[in-house]
Image (cartoon, rainbow, N blue to C red; front, top):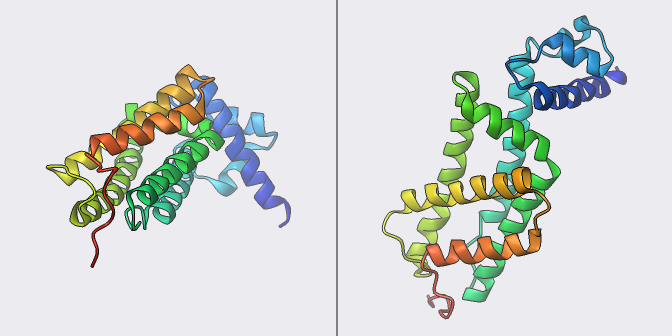
Length: 207
């Protein structure tokens, strides 16, 4: 039916808002349907529980972030010169900042509720963590083989890089707010490349 996508979207939008206002433990399905202007029976046509709608919200956000990261980072260190690689890294940082900016309320739910919980939410967060660390590790190893960066342990470096993105964006975009995002982008790019001992003056090795 034509109204079904709109009803589902209204439930998700209301759930995000109520989860933010009351926190997950204190939110009831009745709160969500009241905010969405639908009956409780309608909610159960789409979701079995508040846990399921929360999981759906978090999974959608992490999936979109993963797709963006995969698209952008697949050739992160494929440049022929150091300048090209700096441009690629900057593009990835800019896009990640943008998607956080477009989904701040969902990012806040995932990091405030998901990280602090156990069971379902712990699984959601840890699954997202594993996906992104593996993506980053693959790119770090590629850059090491090409001689662009130096780091003793690609896995440790990947964990640290993920933590840099996650915590810095959480702080500057969700807690501090009113952050100069262009300046933040520049600082993150420089920090990432310096942390990996990136050689700015080196061109890619010739075959």
